[in-house]
Length: 79
Image (tube, rainbow, N blue to C red; front, side, top):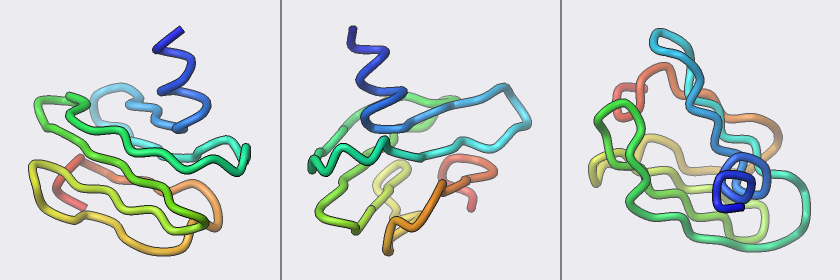
């Protein structure tokens, strides 16, 4: 059940090594904070409030802005 919440409600898809990490929350209209998720050796924090998404990797903001579609990070914490 937790995997389904992380993958579909929060929209976190780690992908395979060398692929982008994709964040694309399902449009339920809920707000959430997901903290301390380990992806490829990095710690990710995601926060969705309204239509604003903030993503941190190892404490550094790697994305902050309006959620208007999937957000792709080539390497968590590296862009």
